[in-house]
Picture 1 (cartoon, rainbow, N blue to C red):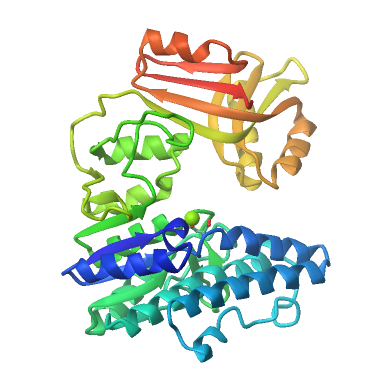
Picture 2 (cartoon, rainbow, N blue to C red):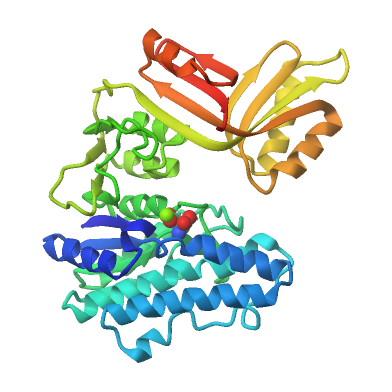
Length: 411
Ligand code: ASP
Ligand code: MG
């Protein structure tokens, strides 16, 4: 059994979904196909959530109708029946899902629709083209706790998923990335871009032979091709190096998706969906190190600096206090630096940052800078360092022998 994961970009339109059929047809092994929401659906659903939350019901409905139309058009282009088309996005986001007191729970109840609908379309389309398949609902099978928007998967889910996948004598299973559900059947999500993580978890649960993440790039490159004209494909990576890259901000793979495959030594391939014959990158057990410099940008960062308000500053005590606040407010730390009297942390900008800064300000004199990026260069050389620092406004830097990290102003 193999696990294939198709992201939003690879199923962004009818042609993309036809391409999935093509790739699935070519594969002789039994498959679990994990799919993300179509294109930018998750962003659109976030707008529905926010509109509803702010009582802009008309905006919510309009946004939702646009999504319904987009999905129905794709289904129509794929030759799926009118009856089927009518079942897509067929809830009313205002009357069918009550506003809850918990924003995050409400968010998950709406946002999960993206993956539910994309997986239904894919399953139906494969079926009509002779690829018999079974649609599995992760809202029922992938049980999680109730940390909505960042749900933790309950490891008992493994059993349920093994049963679901082995009991049926089907060649192909289609299911949703990114979403799960609590034991009492409330939908949850695992964190943005979490479909890779789902694919890795399922592979772990069913002892898959491999996981393949089909992407709109040739594999893992040494720099983001949207920012750098000349990039080099990295043919293989160890699990640890892959985690480092992903954590530094390489968008090609979600940081949480490495450990589940590493635990069972399952190779994870990143391959281009437009060129299924190409080898791409494999992440597996190897002692080989990447031998080209790798540039990774983590955008939309905030640098928060905390300074002691009095003279009794004790680094260890302050650190635990600071990280307690950071953890409770779900900030994602990308870099830490400390001196005798200050601690600086670079974090992803998200909706919780403001409250966290407020709470930190009770105990420390806090200053912060927004609109920053964190540039990590692995395998750096003195020449590269020189070149990359020229002309940039650098707020903070951290360099070791092989790795340099700069917090810079976004241009
Ligand atoms: N659809 C979700 C998102 O856009 C999950 C994913 O794409 O991996 O964040
Ligand atoms: Mg995505």
